[in-house]
Image (cartoon, rainbow, N blue to C red; front, side, top):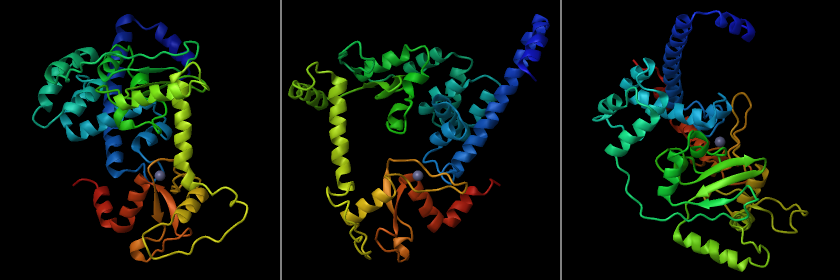
Length: 363
Ligand SMILES: [Zn+2]
C-alpha cells in the first residue's frame, strides 16, 4: 500500500481503533520475530554462512541479510538463547520479554536459573534489567582512576584511555548502546571482546569520513611504551598526539609483519621458478610468500553463487588436494583460507556423515 494512502486512512481512524491496530501489529511483529529467531538459529546450527562464503554468521547477517551490526549481534545472541531455552521464545512471542532483555540475560543463563531470570525480567525496561542483573551478578570492583588523554582537540580522531570500570560506566550512560558497543568495522577489531555490555574493552566508532574514535584500555606496559614513543618521536610529532604516535607504530608493525610475505627487493622483476612441491608438511617461506601474493592476502573460498569470502584475518594455508590424501606442499596445491572456511572444507572432505547428521531435520 502506498505511504500516502496508508497515512490518509490512518488519519481518519478513531483513537481506540488506532491503538488497537498498533497493538495488533506489534503482537504480529513479536510472533514474526520469534519465527525469525528460530530460522536464524537453525541457519546458525547448519552454519550456512560458510557455503555462502561468509566467515561468520555475523558477517552474513550484516552483508547478506542487511541487518545493522547491532541488529545482527542482538538477533544472533537471542537466536542462540531461544534455541536453548524455549521459555524465552514464548515470552518473546507474547511480549513479556523484549529482544534487549534476552541479550542482557544471555551471558547469565543456566538451566537452573533461566526460568527465574525470565520471570525477573518480565516487562522490565533495559535499565531495570541491568540493575537486577547487577544485584544478582555483581561485577568485581576495579579501583582505578580514569586516564583521559585528549590531544589536539581540533582533531576529531582522538584517543581516550579509559579503565574498564569507567568505560563500562560510560557505556551504561549512553542513551543508545549500539554505536558504542558494536564497532562499525568488527572485521578488524576483536568481535568477541567488544560485543557485550559487560566489558566494552575496545570500541571503534566512526566519527566522520576517514576519522574514527578509538576507546581502549591499555595495560601498564603498553601505556609506558606509548609515553616512551611520544618522547622518542618528539622531533617528528612535536604535539605528542597519541593518535598519530599509535598510527605510526601500527604502520611499522604492519610493514614488519608483511615483510616475510612480500618479494625481497629487486627480485620481483626477475621471475624465478617456484620451489618444487614436497611431501613435507613444512611450507618454505618462499612458497608461503608466493601463495600469499597470488591470493592477495585474502581467503579464496568461493560460494556456489560465485561470491569470494573477503576475510583477511585468521588466514591459513590449505592444501587444495588434502595432504592426507597425497596432496603436495607447493605453490600450485596451496591456497589461502580463513580458519572458518578451512575447517568447513575439512569437515566437508572428512566428515560428510557428520555434516549430514547435523543437517537432518530433528525427529
Ligand atoms: Zn573465508
